[in-house]
Image 1 (tube, rainbow, N blue to C red):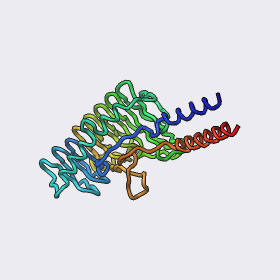
Image 2: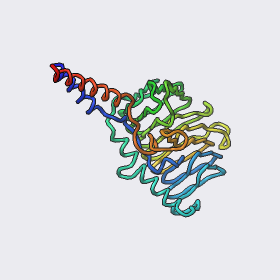
Image 3: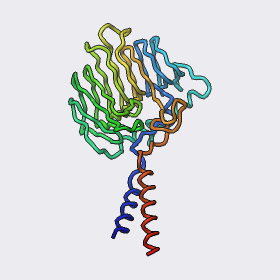
Length: 289
């Protein structure tokens, strides 16, 4: 019976998912801002490339990478037009990151207008549109695994109304948070002052960052992640977009949560190895009886 139980344990380890749910952005990982169209009326700063399939309208905004649309507007140097098209397909194509993330099975729920804690390696889904209230606090707990992925699926629109705070605990990284918004994603700044928003935003329709009180030259907020909208990206105020970060191989890039392959959950191989060693020892003892 002991041998049967041990075999059962080994089978459980073998069938246990070796990877946490992940979102692969592929070539889009080098883009901070990507969409069908992009409009910026403030002096926004984007880390990474900026690409749109149709038009880009900027008013003094800058990017650390190139700014390019394959059809018209911002000129593309050799190869950049293809890079934009490939990145857009990697996110919004039939098998792209947005579609894949929308189809992941949820392990928890995301409720409206309330403070909530999210655990790493999990997928949280809403039953409809999410609209946050001023003072909402969201806690992301990586439980000691800095590579832990957080996926928030929103079946509808996401509207952030005023001040929203994030608490990243036990190794949680903003780069590993993915907001998968079915329709429109809107951050409404109003009179609450600049907003800091953690995570990568993938919107199935539009993304809008409203202007802060004081006009387009006033900082509306900071997004610690990249922003991809299938149709239109509108930055109505000055916004700092931190861009995607591939942290799986240190600062030199690699194939991590945003760049390619998913990150293994810690402990799986250790447990499997221990189980196999125990099984081998038990079989050896039985053979020598």
